Image (cartoon, rainbow, N blue to C red):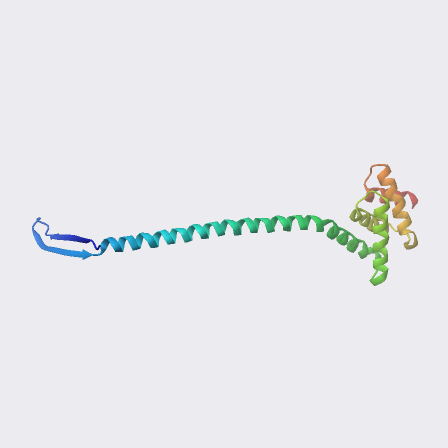
Amino acid sequence: MAQSVDFEIRLKAPDGSILRNLRMEVDGLGDLLKGVTRRSEEAGAGLRKMAATSVLIDTSVRAVENLKGVVSGLVAPFASFEQAMAKANTMANKSGEEFKALERQIKSLGNEIPLLRDEIAGGLYQVISNGVPEDNWIDYLKKSTKAAVGGVADLGQTVTVTATLIK
């Protein structure tokens, strides 16, 4: 059943006298208001759904960022080894298979001696820069790493002090 609503609008002059009376009857206003209410409820439900999706997306983004942090943490030791080997190679000046063989020897030392591979690669840099002959690099480095571990000392300092004593 349609509802009818009457509107009355009075336009007054500054002195208070009525200039014009407007009267209007609107049929079906109730139905119109119900339709507006229904559509606003639908819009609200849509917004709540979007908010839930937004929370899900935000949670997913955080999970991906956390995973990125974990992966970066796992990759970091390998990257630092590669950087230390590249630095040592600035002194060794090896390429191709010679460089790969040198890397394998350093990794092998890392399996024997309880030091991080990047520390051992840093020690190789020190060995080379202290003038140890190339045919003695790995043996000298192995003895220095053992001395550093046994003496709870810094490998770079151990290599430098030993090289100085030998010279």
